[in-house]
Image (cartoon, rainbow, N blue to C red; front, top):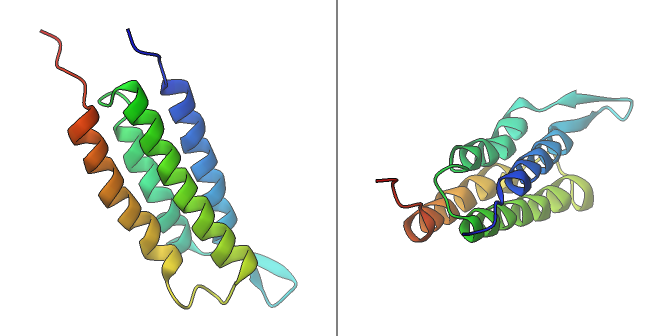
Length: 118
């Protein structure tokens, strides 16, 4: 019997939502913040897709794929938003999380999908 990593997966999704919120709140003329909807969607989409795999992946694959997605997302958000903010002109924030989910989740699904109940 494998460990149940679903609560940790939900925590990973919540942390991804916080990263998306942090990436989408951008400065507006130094006095306020506005929500960048494209950044919000680009960072939130991998975690929405990851949430669809909660029931179909086995424990270690569910945890590992979520941690990889969260790590990549946090690295990109921290670098692009807080360390080197330039209005997301190089578009790294938009394509790196989506590329990560396109690579990580198919691999995790191929190797870690649950056997159907018979």
